[in-house]
Length: 89
Image (cartoon, rainbow, N blue to C red; front, side, top):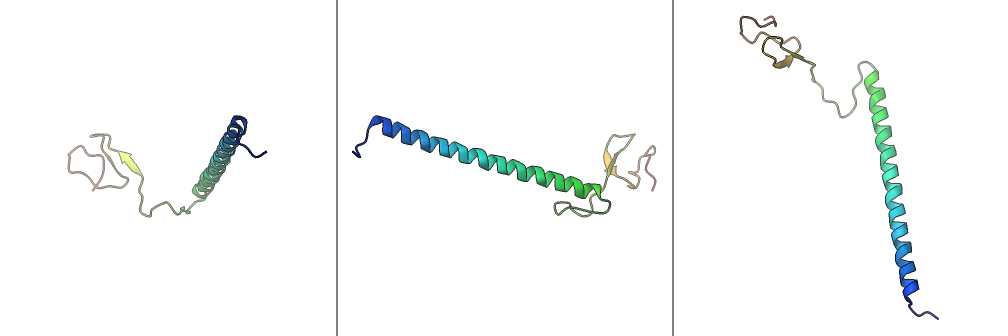
């Protein structure tokens, strides 16, 4: 009555594999939803002027490319000392 047969063993393995894959699928789906919500929340925070999300660091400056030497420097930077430097100072 409770003997093990090849059919029962295969069926048990198939059920375990099915449940395992379903768990992985739903976990992955939940992670994608959470990531999408996180990105949307960051996008909303970035669209509001003067707001910074937790991951942003204070003191980040916009960079500009020097037309003469091609180096990227902070906007409002002082002159590098070259005669043809476009930055004042």
